[in-house]
Length: 401
Image (cartoon, rainbow, N blue to C red; front, side):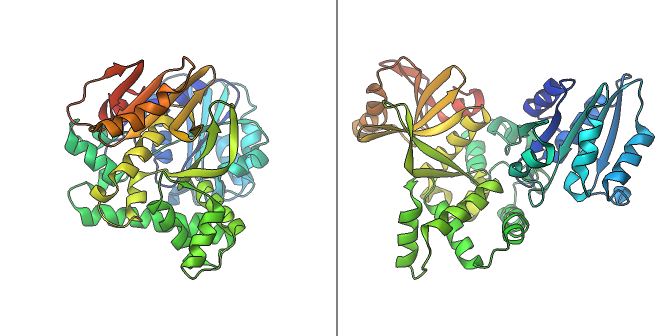
């Protein structure tokens, strides 16, 4: 199967070539980090002035590279001083003391290093220790909706959008296909179980596995709802599990570290400060979220739509928080350096009460930052109401804000 270029990441990687930093691709398992390396090779290996040195520790051919000395010797034999050397190492954590080799080679003239690693041994939180600030991190997300269409050769339609919202954006589904629900959910289950086992249970020596599973199911059910560790602890006790709020916070940090979940803190719009109590939790991949949820897509469509909007805002580079405005709430406060936007999300915009609920909080914000309502209302064409832009979910997922 041919490799499809994910242009967003290809451009990001290319933009850091020659800038003197180790390039590190991070993200959950099976999100396509290895294929971004392979795509880099396809795009650059035929250029006369570039020498690509590639190590893939998932292949038997590289089984003899076990230590940093092995890696140094392999690179030394292929290194060409007269060219721009690009050293790519996939699953780098399998090499003992890899950081000593990587940190040495990237200082060579006209040399770039790009690495990926499994979350069980080289999660984002470990990088500052291993590479001591000499790296730039590129976060790899599941497929966006346009990428999903390309990977599965689909036309943009309501039916395709529903498939995306249901199955999510793991690139490996391209090989599985979307024709069999049984095959799709079996694949997603395999990915989920591997993350739980390798990146959480084994990594952190978890003993209370039943609670670990119950808590992740709880987060699937409460996607997009304000929760606190204390309220979850009380709920679990009502279900017969005596769990402290500290343990809830600890386990949630494990999910986030493995890129299963993301949390959005509350932000006081008028006071311009972050509020410490209560957060909303969203899933990194919609398919994995739906795998752990009760019922079918129609029973939790609003949660999935809100999660999809949150994830796409993150992909667009925004820091996303939950807005607090007096007694009301704005779904998302989205910020980049020098840029702020407010976003409300709803499934359908029909009755006046829904319109008041979604537009009302935005109308109370007195600054001049852009404001949006995103909905899946059928036949919606973009329109402005009192300076607030109402756009369709499909338009947002295709074109952004």
